[in-house]
Image 1 (cartoon, rainbow, N blue to C red):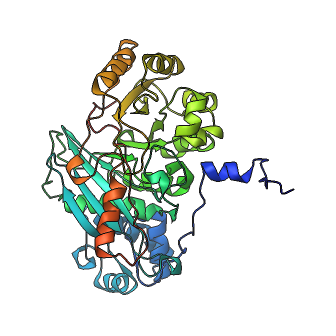
Image 2 (image 1 turned 90 degrees about the vertical axis):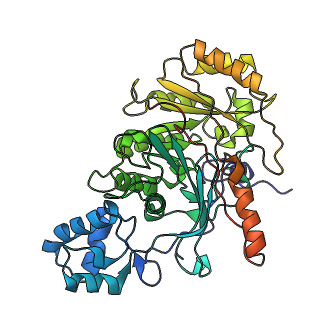
Amino acid sequence: MATASVDTAGRDESVVAAIEKLPEFQPDAVPPGRSSLIGLTREQLKERLAAIGVSEREQRMRSGQLWHWLNARGATDFDQMTNVGKGLKAELARAYTLERPEVVTEQISRDGTRKWLLRMAPTGKHDHNRGAEIECVYIPGRGRGTLCVSSQVGCTLTCSFCHTGTQRLVRNLTAAEITAQVVVARDRLNDWVGQNPVAAGEDETRRAVTNIVFMGMGEPLYNIDNVIDSVGVMSDQEGLGLSRRRITVSTSGVVPQMQRLGVEAHAMLAISLHAVRDDLRDTLVPLNRKYPLAELLAACRHYPGLNNARRITFEYVMLKGVNDSDADARELVRLLKGIPAKINLIPFNPWPGSIYECSDWERIEQFSEIVYEAGYASPVRTPRGRDILAACGQLKSETEKLRARARMMLEDGIGAEGVYAGADDDEG
């Protein structure tokens, strides 16, 4: 009689497969051809300079110059770098580019939300000479602009209510590819030093992109190294200049990496919770079978830097007749007791093939009232960008339609799902 194979941790491999997917490949360490300098860390810039013969003594100064032009000024051509010598500019142009990901499509909603389908540069033979495609969404608000970025092409996880969970996991995005999404947004919004942002809010800095949420495609903590590096580039005050308190990383509950995220990235934390009982969360978020609620909430209580000014955001998608009862609301309050937290209630956006429906509006309001009365901020997320299919859970289907029309003979498209934490509520 055949027996199920068991992995090194003693778990049935069929069970593991139902929780996590493995990437189809990893990008080559050195991409083919002339690689772009966009999105690199300071150390990586120094390495690129060393590769074209810049002495170790000069690397710090020259990398600082490049850093300013790339991440503060948004340079698109080496000739724009007025304080860099002609000889070095010629060497840089020979070896590297300043290319951004290609904007395949841009859609702008009636409410100002913008959705970009981005194609990354090929990372090696596994990309079949064309780069991976992801989607990135910008949501303007009063005094803020939130950019939802992706961290993987596809997703490691298999959450049953999430459209991205139905996709294969192609690969992790590099730190440069994650950061490049911010660069593209700033390009499209005229959001560089000396420019006037297209969607300037009431914020006195007049920056169009003020907040970053890692809530697009992928599970960020299964790409922890690249996520930490990209947060470092985004928050460097001599470059992109975003506050770490305005960068939120969302996880479905990869408990072993949460401590490291807090210590090394100092980012705000969001938890995709969605259920208050292990049996239900095992279905909605199968990762719960690996890291159940008690373990997840214990890790939340010990998240580095946690206090009332740095609250954890708990995301809770409202599913009709599944997780939206008064009893669920009261249990949610009980579970989170003692954790500085805010709770974002997210109306579910159905997608083709989904078995779930959105809770009725009256039910959402009643749920919110119970949470609010217990002392927790519990904003109901206003769906944004529905007319361009940019709301939570809608992005993948539109990408596939675009690809079906234009590139029917190529592989299936990749889309991104996002929950846009902080897009509508006040800064915590």
